Length: 361
Image (cartoon, rainbow, N blue to C red; front, side, top):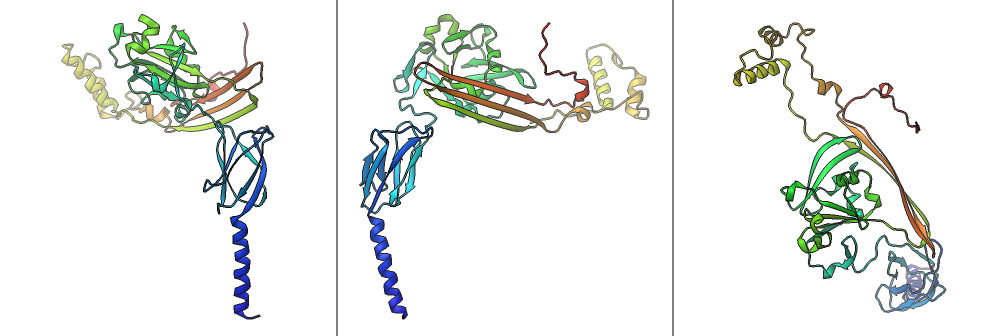
């Protein structure tokens, strides 16, 4: 068989394959990730000429004659998928989308309103945005994410941070901080501490009400601004378990400059002298000369305690488990969160006297 004959046969076979490729009959069933059939799923060819929808049993049957190489499967509330066209049966599983509200709403604490109808000064942030920040406290995630919200960290320790929150400036009436409302209930007692006991995984959204019209519902209590927290709710679906493990490395952004003990003694005496208390009001002349000489470190030490006891890098671990689901009678959502954050100081574990067991007295 010569080369010309081979080329002719190859061209003929390719032509048959090409014609078959342009015309295909595809059928199958579409279900969700839990095995339930999905009715009304739109099945369309890539060129959009051939379209079908699944029936009450989740079945579809589509003839493709427009040369499309891919099929698109879409249903509101589910993540759309594309699959390569294959002759015969093509079964598809669609996953439920995280959020599929086509009309975004703003939650004011006791009522909701479509965002397109809101003329008040409000800003919001979602759970997905908050979860991007690898921090130990929810209030730290708000910094820089909500225009008009001013935050100030008053103290910080491992796994616990107190942050004061103001709306539209630090100089609020009577120096008060913003009011916090969670799921419609005002949280008055130490509202800032609420953020220590709730995580970004439990939050659906956070809205900040900044002007008088949006705060009118809360009267004088909302004069300093209102922070409205909406937590997640259960969904009518089979039990769904989500687990997430995070490990974070932390490091100081700045380190204060260190001065020697000799400089400290000299400057402290100079400060006393400037206040009119004499040249050696804090340290004697012998002590000042001894620190400056640096010969007897037993009596005149020069230790950099921060360098000796501080860590260069610390670690934070968080384990989060969500359970959600429900049926016709009830829905549920629960969250279990465990956080461990190392401090910046070196600690001997044998001297901490830590006991993880509960003790009832």
